[in-house]
Length: 134
Image (cartoon, rainbow, N blue to C red; front, side):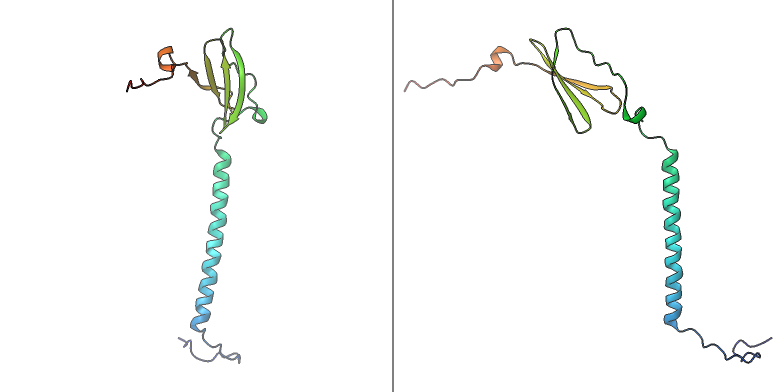
């Protein structure tokens, strides 16, 4: 068996052993390389996974949902249409009542209705406190 500390036979000078700071630098370089490779693999896995998952309630071609029927009673008219917070609000009214229809712009489906009811005559009157006779 040969001794590792013995001088090589080929005439080359022996290499000095690596210092601790050089060993630490090599270890840090290898660790950073592994972290970089792991990061690339993680990004690749996420991209592939998301490309195979269908999106939630995918809209039709180019985001259009085609024709959507929103039922309005005879005599009701559209007073205003507003879009906010990812919803469309359509205000409709007739002589006696008003409603706000909430519609999803992605699907064209009616989400819900809000009926605006007038107060009764008694509740809508302004309260006048009785005056003191003093």
